[in-house]
Amino acid sequence: MKLTNVPLFFFEENGAVICHCLPLDVSSCGRDLDEAKHNLKDAIEGFLEACEAMGTLEEVLTECGFVKDGTRWKSPVILESDSIDVPLSA
Image 1: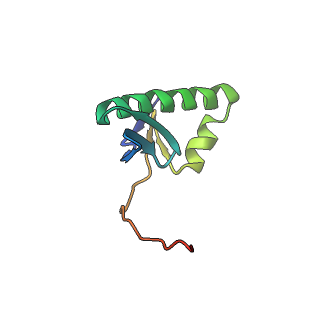
Image 2: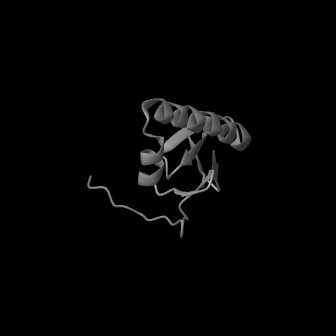
Image 3: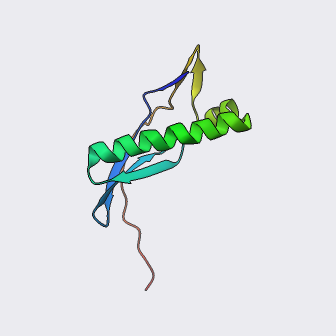
């Protein structure tokens, strides 16, 4: 089984690069983009193994927007990424 076209988002936090998989809500970090991406792949694999061990893998992937296509699970399509300013009351 394989997940295809899994979207990843990168940002910096306190000098570390954070890589986040929005559909699965799994994150990891590294010193650079490549390390953060590698670490996230490991984290996702661990998450999916745990779901499989609990017998909830298909349910979790479906709830996260993935669509089964044979032996592949297609990732939900990210339509747009944007940012906003949010005021804080002081």
